[in-house]
Length: 105
Image 1 (cartoon, rainbow, N blue to C red):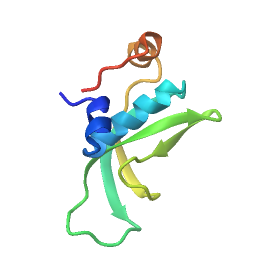
Image 2 (image 1 turned 90 degrees about the vertical axis):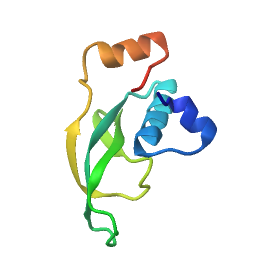
Image 3 (image 1 turned 135 degrees about the vertical axis):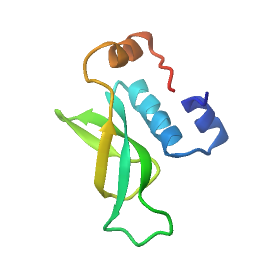
């Protein structure tokens, strides 16, 4: 199982690793952050050799609303198809903030 700390130390990873690392850093600064996963479209970007693929990104809660950030694609993208994110209430986010640590899978 790869952790955010592994991605930081090794300075490499895939979209999931970068999202986990960014979430961990946000939470260290008491900024609410959540993991999101889904399909990242290729709308409005130069054509790529690879087809649209499953991807991970994160959202932070600032100014009373959620904002999308993508630690892998450092360019605004459109056409994201959100498949899953953890609930805003409940044990997942609450437990992580109360203990000061979170395990990512």
